[in-house]
Length: 225
Figure 1 (spheres, one colour):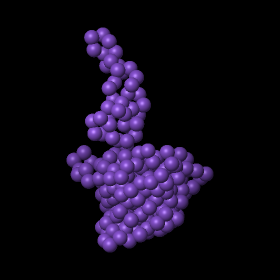
Figure 2 (cartoon, rainbow, N blue to C red):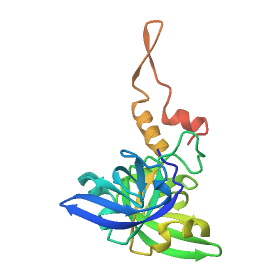
Figure 3 (cartoon, helix red, strand yellow):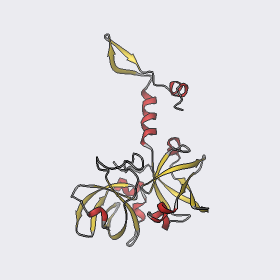
């Protein structure tokens, strides 16, 4: 699990491609301080496994499913990428729950300065994910934990402070570029629970199977929707 707080910007050293499979070698420093084989590192928000490393770089495999679903397929030698190690149990939870499982890519529609911030507007390529995005909710863009400013039927907006812009690869990106999007996992679980809520559960009381009270109307009546 990750939190969406980028620790370092890495640089692509080598990309070995074979069909839709890749091995990426990424130059880094901070995240290598306690790296081990098999560790999880989020690269532009994609959870990948360390297969080798040395004093200033590490390598990861990218399987075809990840290749097809993320912007990693667009990487080139020298490209900068956001890096975050998996969250330590004793660490600060500065962002939100990020799994490193990208839901879709999105195209940047605009990048507009607004006083001390920059507002980005994105168009997700998979409209299915709009059901998980709400104004004021959390979203992960290229591994960065951000707050949704606005969402319409066609696009999503976020506002970024100068520190975040300077410390992440969004600084490099402009209209037309592609980013990875991961929606808040809480919304996905809620949808799943609502789908099965009215059905019989395995909770038995007095020898009888009870039905769940978790329904859309129950959540609305109690201020959750």
